Every structure is written in C-alpha cells, then in structure tokens.
Image 1 (spheres, rainbow, N blue to C red):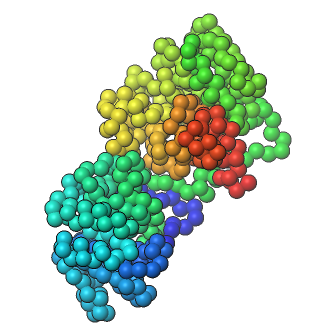
Image 2: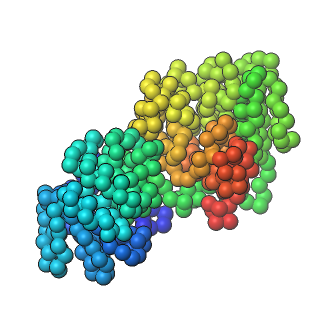
Length: 492
C-alpha cells in the first residue's frame, strides 16, 4: 500500500479540508488522476488483505463510489474475480469510470438489498465505496439496510476513506455504521479514524498517498501526525563532556498529605528521561522511591518558594501533582518566574486562564479539559482536536489533551500523537508524563518540541511495558522503559 515518504507528517483532514483539497486538485486538472491513484491503492490493499476469492465492490454515487470503480478495474486487470454493485452515479468521474468498466467487460449491477444478499454469498471480501467524508449521520434507508446486511454477513470489509455511516469529524458513533477490518484513507487521516468508538470500527488504517503536491494536504489539514523520524530529530544529543549541571535541573512542586506518590512518580520519570538533578519540593514528606531524588519538605511551601533566590531556580518546573488546595496560587506564582513549566493535576485550574506563557505546557486529561472549558467530558472526547485548540487559545502556551491518542495544540498548529497501550489506563500515568515533559524542557527543548517528543516517548515506553505486563502495567513500569523507548526512537 502507498505510504507517505519518511519524515513527512501525515495530515489530519476534516470534511472541509477534503473539499478544499479536491478543489485545488480539480483546478490543477489533477482530480481524475487522484481518483486513479486512490483506486489503485484500494486494489493493492484488497490484494494484500484477501489474495484469493471473489471481491465484491459496492459503489455509491459520489467520488467514493468512483474510487471503488477504479479499484474494480485494477483488480480485474490483475485477474481477480470481481463483482460490482452500484447506486446511480452522481459524480462526473464516477460516471466516466463506470463507462470504462463496461468497456473492458465488467458488469456493474444495481445495488439493491436483493442483489447484495445474492453477491454476499460468494464474496471473500467486500470493498465499501458507498459514502465518504461528506456524509453526516444518521444513516438512513435504504443505505442503513445495505450496511446492516454487510455487517451481518461476516464477510471481511475494506473501507475506502472511512467506513460508511461514520461522521469523519468526530469520534462519536451514531446508529450502526459499517464495521471494517481495514480502511484505506485518502490524502490524510480523518479524526473519526483516530479517536474513540469511531476508530474501533475502522480496523487497520492505512494512509494512501494520491501523489498530489506534498504540501497541499498539510496546508488544508486540521492537524498533523508527525513521523518517528521527525520526532527523533527533536531529542537532545549529549556530548562526552556533559555533566549533571548541563543535563538539566528539574524541580517537581507537588505532594500534599495523602497524595505524595504523585510527585514521586513525576520525579522518577524526570530522572529516567535524563535530567541531571531532580528535586521534589513538597508540603509533606515524600517517600524515598529512588535515592537519586532530592527531597525538600516545607512547612509553608508557597512562602519557601517565594524566598528562593533567582540564581537557585531550576531549568524547568513540574507543578501540580498532588499539590493540594493551594495549587492555583502556587501555580500562578511559579508561572510568574517565566521558566519552562509543566502544569498538571491540581495546577489545572480555570482561574489560571491567560496566565500561560510560551514555555509552559498544560496537560489535562479529558475530565480536566472539560472542567477548564466548562463543558462535559463526552464533549471533549467527541472532538479532542477542537478541545485542545480551545484550551490553547484560553490558557496560552502548549496544551496536551491526554488520551489514546493525545492531542498537542500550540501557536503553530495541532499535532496528534502516535502509539500507546491500553494498559496505560491506570493511576500515575499523567504524573509520569509530566515529569518526562519537564525533563525535556530542562534539557533545552522548546515547549512544543518537548510536548511532542515527550508524549511519543511516553506512549512508546507504555507499549514496551505493556508487552511485559499486559493491562497490569503501572506508571513505574512505564518510567523504567523510557530509556529503551528513547533508543528505539533514535535507532540506537
């Protein structure tokens, strides 16, 4: 299957972005060539997914149907047994590709419940070219009945662009969309293929390159998903004369009676990510989980920080983990230092809106993001990209909306992260991420670069830990794998 070249970010396109990209292609006289590339990519995917047996292609009336008809032509040229069922063609290119099929002897039969029922009996693979990104739920009759037939048949399905019945823009699932084993998405990823329940219905997703000018899709994109090569290039390189003073000094400001473990987890992650010196400043005693961690317990944490001479301040701050009721005032105080700062947990307070600066990173999970925006957690989960952008505009700096995947918003745009493991749904993972991010800030990365590289390393470490522990992995397990994740990313 065609893939973007190495080092090229994958665009994330909204329906409006797809429409704008198609308009550019049409103006340049490239739209028909793009459909040809799309059909070729779908045919190649069908060959890979199902090397033998009859391929049943379902073509809608729009451009998605045209892609299916081109795929049928390529599969027929490869000697495959194909059957094509189609709705009345509305798009000009869909009509022309239907005529081309007829000229080479491939019959295109009307798509009806009866014809579909008959063809499903002998099909080894269904290719879904019914609806694309222009669809808005709910799925209505007769398409709803046709999709239900495909789902009930048990025949594996390859979807073109996204499964029929999904809204390309959100993670929300309405009704009973088509359930695909594979999806070949075109020009760019779609939010529905990345997040929540919608993504579960897409199966294994491959991005097809339609050979358009390389920047066009990114220029129309809602967000992008950087490649491993791009992320690896952000990581700091340490020379032989490095010492603990040049490797970054990080303070973790957190820990309150009953929540001291959160600060300790952040400190461990900062050390495992390469910080030279890590000190926990807390309102209570923090357990000695690593002898390399330095501990400072203050009867009055806020006052102690106020009295700290400027020359003793660290290279980066990690603020909020188990910080307690004074978190908002302490966070505002520390933001005034204008140091590279990560804010998490108790430091994520609505009253800090507008207090951020270019070197700070806010790290809410969806529940915290909902509280900060005054909305509901399902609203955040429905459209994490929009939520991250809204938070960045409201709070400043860089925002990481944590999840699977996480979304990173900064003044220059939005990134969607890669990787992770379901076992990371356990306590302390956010504290570990915060310590990791602060470590990268302390080693000299900008806030956007630290957020992108840190989220990726965290996810990769989770994958490595998950391979050992399954769903029973802990935040400490993830910290222990940060070194291997780093080496794996840079090819060491």
